[in-house]
Length: 344
Image (cartoon, rainbow, N blue to C red):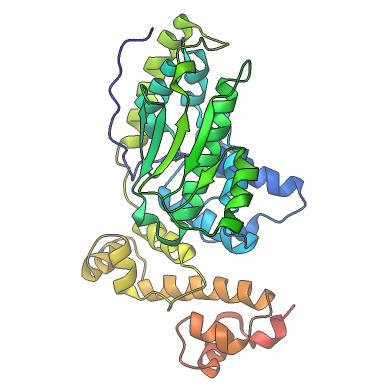
């Protein structure tokens, strides 16, 4: 049995491994889909995708999944994304967990190194009752349901992986957001357990009587060898890196959805938890200007919406223009031609 491990606080602004996003991009390519729209404005390059040591920011990941949700169109597509996640996508964490002595110890290890995971929620697992909870995530805004679905789908798959040599002790899943019964049936089909909605907190219930069974690949020596490596990696992702304010603003624009007015400097500053004056000062220090970044993001979004044959009045309003004529003038300034020539 592993010694008791304390669960560190989840660092929301920690860096994230590129591995999961890289696998999702590869998956889209295998389906014949162009991943470029998913990466637009995120700052994630092909070189970054090709380097397994790459770390990305939470805002970059959120912008990626904002594009994913927009392109997929299904509000429950987080279930499919979560089902794609495997322990191998967690790097060092994925290497150590399978070698814990028991299922209970494997879960304790996962919680010990939770900062090496992808979750944006505060997780907890009562190792005596078998109840995992996910709390928080309000900062995710409209992406919160997507991330909850993703994390629960991964957790359900992980439990099945832990018990692949015996009976899977999953009992039920409860989500803290409401859904009508007809929508819930899709969740029960995807997760394979009874699902309820509108609970006080998101929970996954596991029969605790099976938690002390041995892991199939238990290896105490490997755990001892890998734990210092996990600790070093954890220190790396949690350590503050120099903030690139230009990239943060670009990512915030990329994360902006189709609904609501186009964000002004004050809106972006609030999202980045600073004053507008501070934001503009940081950008000036990097040789950037908010209006230029806004126009660049607007032009990228305009080309995306034109490809969907959205009415010009709707595009103009979504990009913060009072009328279509103002949008057309801006489009000509950006591309040297009217938007009508780029209709597909």
